[in-house]
Image (cartoon, rainbow, N blue to C red; front, side, top):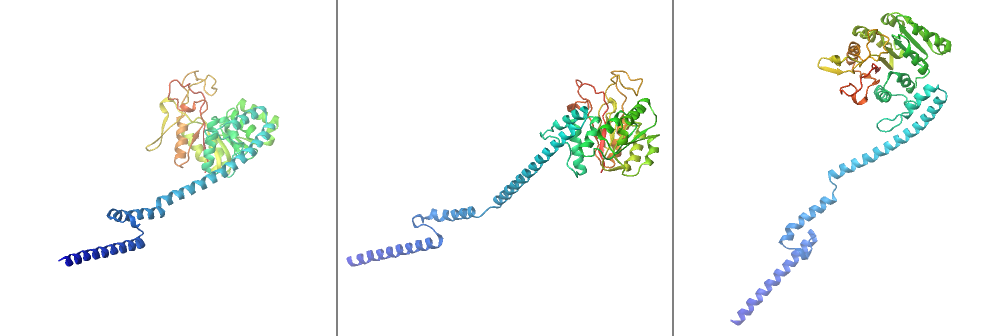
Length: 377
């Protein structure tokens, strides 16, 4: 009996040894092929360890999001480098143009010097100084934006000759005005812009008109600028000019809808590509500040304001009374250029920029009529 018990114990020991050896072998195989440490092999580790390996593999493998962020970072670095190059070029150009401003100021009259200094010192919302000359080879869109910002700072028609000089046209080009009346504005254009030729179109030879013409000849300016007076209706005179003739033309004749529309149709082919076509009296009375440009499309125009007692064109003008609206002229301009998908700009004159259309009662009423302008494609 005792021998059987010893044999049974020995059998159990042998079985235990075999199981232990088998376990050790399994642990060795698992450690070799799966990378499991021998002291962590239990049920929980066997369930958790593969997840750890997957996480390590995911960390080692770059994700799509990381690649996308890396590409965006590289693009931003390249953009910053490009912007730095552009800024350096602009700084160099500004220095060159400041020297031009000093040169022009030294050879200009006191009035022109004052105006040039105002323009040169003006800054836009970003604090970038306006140079004396715009960069060359501007596209129409760039010229529109440039002229709009330029005229926003000095928002009066008196700035047109300086805008033309800013585009590099001083001393060259062809200009003209339809309806010069006393020739005040044409005289300013000729003296400051100094184009090669200037065409005056006026029906009547008024005293002020004749006096200014004689003064131009007396000063010798007419010899430097070929000034020609064409007497008659503008639509009869249009045939005297070839197509693509004018670099700047100012329409200030009859302000009736039909007359303005006829001037636009007749003189539009006479404008060069990149030229500026402009005109006066872009405003309406209080009852007609909203104009239907196209079916379902309305536009708001400035209020003409009140008379200041110095209006020489109307004997019935009463100081402080509402000025006669020029909505017919404005409607002709808006309709004509809306059909061509061309943007129309206008000056502010004596209006407050934050209340262009005088919607607030406390805003002072304007007394000067705005001018409109477009850049010819």
